[in-house]
Image (cartoon, rainbow, N blue to C red; front, side, top):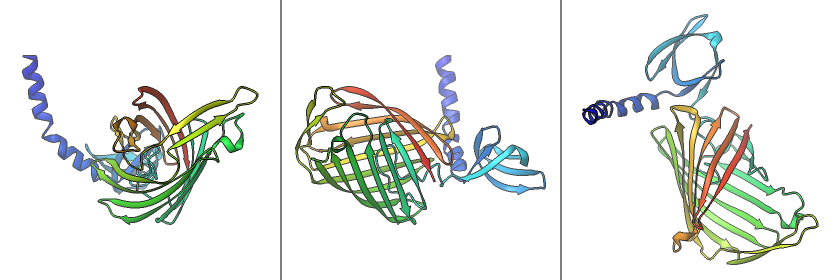
Amino acid sequence: MLRLLISATVLFILPALPAISQVRDSLRYIVQMESGDSFRGNLVGYTDSTVTVETEFGDVTIPKRLISSFIPVDGPFIRRPHHFLMPSASPTGPGGFISNYELGFLYGGFGLGYGATITAGATIIPGIALRSQVFHVGAKFTIERSPEYELAVGASYTFLTLDHPYAHIYAVGTFPLGTGRYSGMLFYRAVGPEEAPVALQAFDYDTTRFTIFYTGSLGGAFGFDAPAFGRDDIRWVGEIWNNDFTKPENTVSMLGVRVTNDQLSADFGLALFTAPFIVPVTSFTWRF
């Protein structure tokens, strides 16, 4: 009897899901309430003291004093230049951002209109000599923008200590699917050694020595972010990277959740390496 009830419920709900999703996708604003709650909607009418908002469950009339703002869905909630670390094809501009990854890597960028995005970053690990820190600069050019997809090409230059520079070129495409955003990227290591011996010395402790192996040249990545728990200010964020298509063991994946508003966001998740081991990951971003 219980199985029959569950099956009947599923059969009843499934046909309605595309219609609900279609209605939700047509709602172009996040209605931010003074209480901190938010929901999707379109403004369809107003008086001196109230506004009428179309929602996925019908029209509602709300006193103006209870509403903080209307934020475009395709604005800060979706159009970000990255998923977590992976660049999307979306431009940064107009405006820019400052991020802090793992509390030790400062990263920022700005947009030149809706085309070029310039980024740079560096680690700030106390006690490590400046020449042994990690530095990064990059440029991305969004060459195609439409409601169906975006395309971009870019290049980055990363120093794993000043003795070991790596240059990459890449192409990335981003497209919406339902209320989520998905990207696929191909990248090529144009400059950089296959073996990079690194020596680090923090304060007066013994020197730590290890070797970074980067044997492939062609790699790829897939990333996404999508609303979680039916909210646009809480999003799932995920990525999968592989720096050498001939070696599946060179794969790392990440899954986390992003809490965001129109200017600030915080990401919390886990990264899985094929060694295997799991590392907690965090980032904090301010957009301006």
